Length: 272
Picture 1: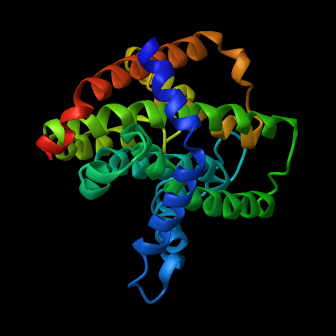
Picture 2: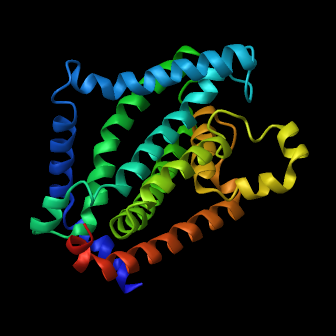
């Protein structure tokens, strides 16, 4: 546990540096593009339109999900997935892609995954704002249930940093790990309820064992929770078992991530 507290302390004492470097990364990423930072909004918007047409209009025929239009049901979970996917893959390569920073930086290397997280958060806030506007258009208005967003946002940040600490270290030591992770994230997309309603009676009754396994997936917990928050279909405290499982997984990931990071970080330059 000392290793976990040390890593957390390093993040808290360097929040200013993390924020400044994240903003610098954001500017440099799209500096050579004609549309610049607009691509941060355009790219996920194009994806949303594709899934809306294919799944919402063609496959589901605009049938409602949990009593709401498909696009209103899709968006809260989809933007959470997009953010998590980008961050997991970005954090995995964060140290390898910043080799000069790793060799020269005067602050803890454990803050590099946090920089990637802060950078992707900028895009998430834009997408969240667009999502709120679309939700309002389709009759989903603010309610007490929206307060749950704060809880699930904290869940998402804790999960992403704990995973990023593990994957960034693994990628430094074994470069092939990032390629494997990319394939794993493609699988996660289909088993995390991003575009399908895993809570429908047909799915639950047809594959009860598979659903029990899927429901302990942290991606599913966050995606489903974001939908509950926006659509008012449930409260996080109504499923204490899922909450305990989720935070137990986060605790385990933090312990593993902190241990392997501190064990290998003095040799990161040699591996890179």
